[in-house]
Image 1 (tube, rainbow, N blue to C red):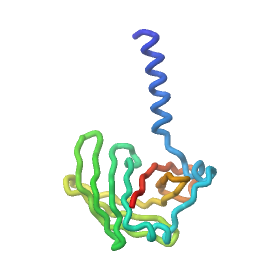
Image 2: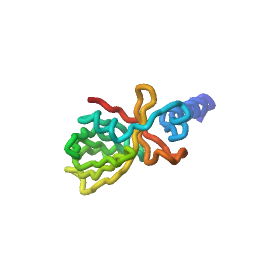
Image 3: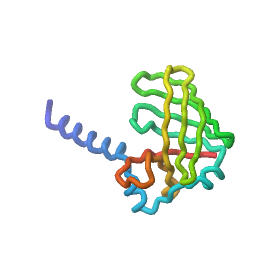
Image 4: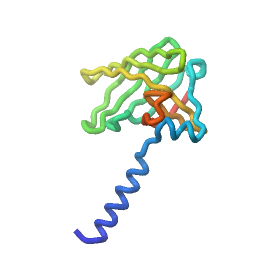
Length: 143
């Protein structure tokens, strides 16, 4: 391998790390992010969320409805397969949204509780609002 290929490879890896780097809850709060509480979440419904899975192995687009249900689609990157998704959600008094998700094409379920943050016009979700070291995932929210 020549030196040019090694240098280009190193630069590519450095930029890939920047693109996929995720902020922590502490970094978001230090930049002025605000947590989306229960009342704000409920006022936004129905709303569609889109984003990469926390493990980076897929993505989902889910529409949350005021009746406590959601539906949408998910895609698993390694297998290249997609599935419809559906389930129920609840929001607690501090704004943590918990989902119980099922998939039409895959024999699996997924449970997750996250809080949402808004920084400027960007949205993020995280497993905690008090653990400053908790990682966040950028999420798109649309009406």
